[in-house]
Image (tube, helix red, strand yellow):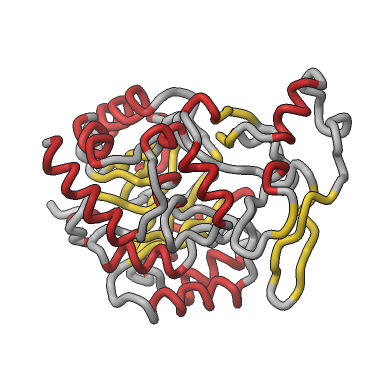
Length: 328
């Protein structure tokens, strides 16, 4: 029986994560898909319908291959999902919520649905809801992390719990073809890489952010829920920076009593305007950010340990395939 991954027919079992905040835009998603992987747009963050449609259209102008769109359910007002339905993206990736209300509508439009999960219980519930694949995280992941255990535990457990019902895509702390081979050895059918593609030419992050990722080591990342304005009580992994160290030095106070709370640390573009970015905001320093980089949320996974340069996404996909073959 063929499944979602068979039907997509990707030459390389690598997905680029649909990083929110505009980080995974059309250039990145299209470049990954064109190179034989599977690119995913980041449309999470409550983008308006018109903006989502524009992102999908821009991606289709760059590639004729299949790609996906990632929606963060706690930040969605439904308009972003409606836009994905209107645009009939190939794969709708849903994170941190119940995918069931959207599965039937997606399938009627010929779309596939992938649920990003934190462990085996989530994965089984998503399969019961009718999704076509699950993406299972480990705590090594950068960005928002639903997992509470490392990838070496969550993926094998999900594979065992699911049997052959739906394919599993591994996500969290993966940067090299050898890492992908390890994830496949856990029983995953593909791997989703976020931080590694953040350090690519096409990722829509400011250059200084990419440089911080390249220079960092795993010990420079922290697992926290500190950057919560816009999405409270959600764990994430970021690079340690001045906002984090000041909060830590103050005794890790609760929201409302944190150092510099309410301060503006910079601005980000929003159409023809610029909007202020407060300290502790969920939004990362995307392209066009102006302000104090070291005060912003610098999402990054433990995979920074094995990232040594910013490279074009197509070159990265080719490198990952070569490394995967060497490791297999």
